[in-house]
Amino acid sequence: MTTADLETIAKTIRKHIVEMIGKAGSGHPGGSLSAVELMTALYFNPHIHFDPKNPLDPDRDYFVLSKGHVCPVMYAVIAELGGIECGELCTLRQPGSRLQGHPAMDKGLPGIEVSSGSLGYGLSIGAGIAAGLKAAKKKNKVYVLMGDGEQQEGSIWEAVMAAAHLGLDNLCGIVDCNRLQIDGTVKEIMNIEPLKEKYAAFGWNVCDINGHDFNAVNGAYDQFKATRGKPTAILARTVKGKGVSFMENNVEWHGKAPSPEQVALALKELA
Amino acid sequence: MVEVFGKKATRYGFGEALVELGQKNEKVFALGADTASSVMVHLFQEKFPERFINVGVAEQNLLGMAAGLAVGGWIPFAVTYGVFATGRPWEQIRTTICYSNLNVKIGGSHAGVMVGPDGATHQALEEIAIMRCLPRMTVLVPCDVIETHKATLAAAALFGPVYIRFGREPVPVITRDDTPFEIGKARVMREGKDVAILACGTMVYESLMAADLLEKKGISARVVNVHTVKPIDEDAIVSAAKDCGAIVTAEEHQIFGGFGSAVAEVLVKRFPVPVEMVAVQDTFGESGNPMDLMKAFHLKDVDIVAAAERVLRRKK
Image (cartoon, rainbow over all chains, first blue to last red; front, side, top):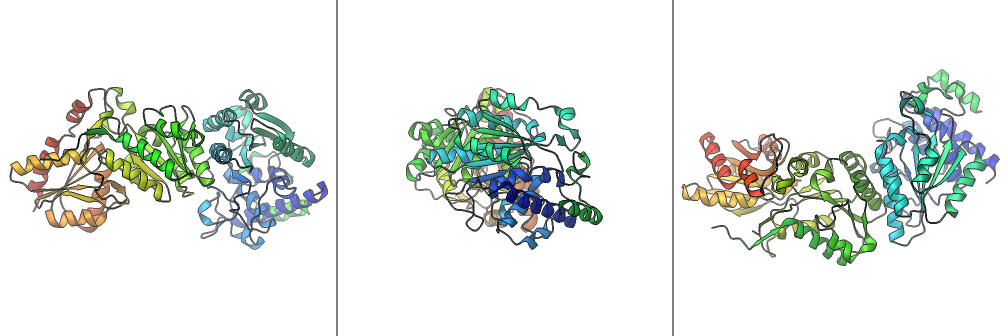
């Protein structure tokens, strides 16, 4: 798929995110929008082997959304892959919906391997899946999307240590470094940098990239697939709220729904 | 006289059953957290090193990786001391494992005050409460080494999260290889009509001893082994209440939120009768010889007898 094609899909996914959160009246647009290129490249280039029509294929690659609050981007990707009708996106956060406010494995939505939403758990889960694949001598790969604020969770570092110790080169930890968390900038609240040096010191292969540049994102996924003997961390430098001018780099938009007027404005920008 | 077939720690029942499971089912996986040899999971590790991971001193990762293995179709057993297996990673158990209904089995060793000299930090006294409040969780508290063996096999055969509680100290063996065991099915160990003693784990033996002492006082006590604390056998509890009219519960666990509470929840709903609970009375454990601690924390047969006498005075 060409970069232009990926950009077109990314735009559609951004529109879905804004629309569904607007309709729901609550949700997390900022971190959903910052992860769009990471998710688009993963699923549409594609790098991940996953078919929503056959979500339990034993040969599939696994994806764990550790920062579960950005599930709108996941739901939009599943819809664009044909796993659900686009109409179902407007059931987000409604009673009885498969599209819970944070991903719920028990609602039977294709592509949701595990429930998530409490931060800091995904990398351990991914490491467990990856270790199991190694034990079974299988080639499937495991991708885990985390946030940068999430790196403050101690449990992440237990998993970082274990994945390197076990040589899980089938595990790719993606960190969406959009620099903001609920209470302010990550740097001010609890600095996590230098993240590249930290992952490297733990024994990981590290790609530090611009998370909105498809060439860089594709290159990082390719590097992960080519790396042997150690897990790969992709530190994707991104802009929170990317693509919607009034949301960009604004901490307010971590967990706030746009009004109908703001939705209209955003969709105009994304047209 | 209580029939006893020797003495052995329940952790052996777990460790040996896990090896048996490893032989029978190639999907069984085990994880330890630097306590492998004291919780007997090293037996599995020696036989099936390719299906074992020691995560080190990292209980959140222990349960997180177990969850991942279950996502990938394995039947993982995550094992360490009960306090650490359930307390530190409680939210992983709640949000990742139970909410996703993952097929993870949690082995909690070193339960109760009988851990002894290590003291309060290492004596699991709250995990029945914090495990049984979780949706989809099954909680097993077997009474001896043979029953622990069976509970471990049964846990593997049941899809979904299971917590199995066992201990470090040798305790009397009071069941036999052919004693029936079914998850969710309490077992009457001794018939009686004046009072019913419902017990789990190590307290089943103490309850049988108590029934002997009560018999000498002319009191007929039924003893029910409620090895499955969740889902609890409501009908067995209601039958005991209807037939005997008074209940004593016995557990090596905190009085609040544990097994006695589970029994009381059934009784207030279906057939209220007077209840007395033998348990740790809202205090922390301490260092000491295991049997001295059982006495100090009022978890012995004589304490069950006293509770039975109290409840009989309240019985109408």
